[in-house]
Length: 215
Ligand code: HEC
Ligand code: HEC
Image 1 (cartoon, helix red, strand yellow):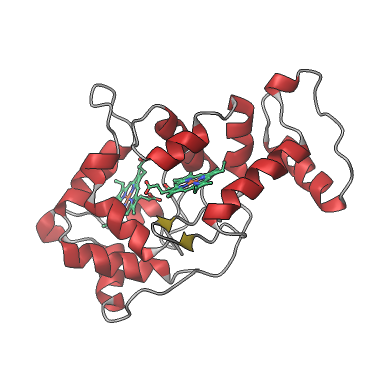
Image 2 (cartoon, rainbow, N blue to C red):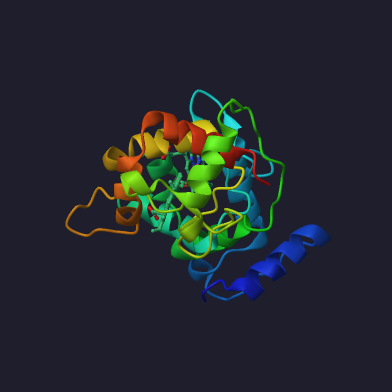
């Protein structure tokens, strides 16, 4: 059984009501119980924050709250396939069943904590201009044209609002080394590749700082 939106809403309701969860389908291997989902998301939250707001440890752990389910699912699959290289998230994701992967993809969507903040504020106006207008001279299109006017994303286009600035700076700087690593089978990361490539370090920092404060 595929865990659809209705099923995950049901799971949430069960969790909130605190009932012991009935098994939703006969075939355990193809479904996820409320306890299993809670145990797994409790684990995710040890790194990604109790409300999915992200966390600054030795490495920035990205915000997952409000993230687009299709994007989350794509990234978990990319870690498993090693198209996106990250040893920590490979270990986390390669043990997930397809049903758990689907359930996790929708779980964080409705969490809405305040942004973690912490970025320098000296170039927020520059960042806003890049986000809304792009950089025509460097062939960088407006970020808003794909990530949305409010940076909430849609489908395969990730939400960037409230994302940790140091996380985004690292991703945009290292795009070629971490994303789309199966060169024979390009994935959605190819869409961002030229954009990340054409931004200067100062422009990356400015737009990442601006986005990190958006709610
Ligand atoms: C031990 C810490 C740790 C745990 C536990 C963990 N993560 Fe992660 N996660 C990370 C780090 C670090 C990154 C950033 C990887 C990178 O820099 O590319 C990440 C990245 C991600 C991303 C990509 C986000 C983006 O914006 O592209 C997703 C999705 C994700 N994790 C989901 C999960 C889920 C779901 C769980 C629980 C099953 C989980 N993580 C558990 C550390 C962790
Ligand atoms: C043509 C569409 C398009 C435009 C324009 C665009 N992006 Fe993206 N962006 C994407 C897609 C698609 C992804 C997801 C790639 C993937 O799935 O690997 C992405 C991913 C990202 C990520 C990684 C998010 C994460 O959580 O790891 C960042 C950061 C980002 N974009 C920033 C920007 C910035 C800043 C701009 C403007 C300078 C911009 N994007 C313009 C399509 C676009």
